[in-house]
Amino acid sequence: AVKNNDLVKLFRWVAIPLMLVLVIWAVFPDFVEKPASRIVDYKTVYQKPLPYEVTLLTTKLEVVQHDDFIFKLEVTGDEIPTDFYVETEGLRYQMETTDLISRTYLFKKVAASIDFVIVGGDYRSQRMTLEVRPKPLLLSYKTELDFPSYTGRVNETVRDLTFLSVPEGSALNWTFSVKDTDSLLVSLDSIKFIVTAEKGEWFFTHRILKSTRMVVIPVNKFAKQPQGIEI
Image (cartoon, rainbow, N blue to C red; front, side, top):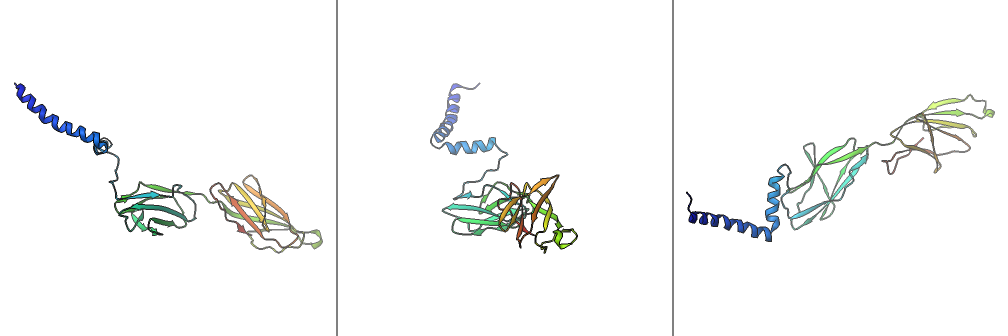
């Protein structure tokens, strides 16, 4: 049997470290809570405390297909790593140092979505994905040339020509085939017109009275500055 004196001694040995833990918890709660939470949440990867802080400035990770994309971050603190890298598919690409705290990386002509992390010193970010959005494209077009009767010329149809020479008064009827396009604009000497659509094709008609510069502009919700195609 266990004597009372032995129980008292055992209690003292247990009580002393228990009281010490409670005092530390009261004064420095993070010292106890953070290790405990890591034991409970054992599947999460934790970043050890660093003598610098990394702020990812680029939060909207999407780019129109085949466009360039710039990723930016800032790093502040007493001991800042010299180099930061973009790591993707097992390879590292060094970020550009623009000033003491700023780093940038240029993703060039992005064709498909990219998974990547940022690495610098002991810092490693969570995995991020640069999402590629479809670019509005003009695939092809045909032009029906309706000549004035005074010319005696037979009407013609041509395809994908970027330069046309026609008599004054000719009516030109375009049919455009596009991809990933919500709307289509035509600029004639900087005056813009909305092209009408029907059954997946887009139609525009204009009578030529003088030399005219024509630009076709496919548009969708992702392209903030859609590029025009001069035809």
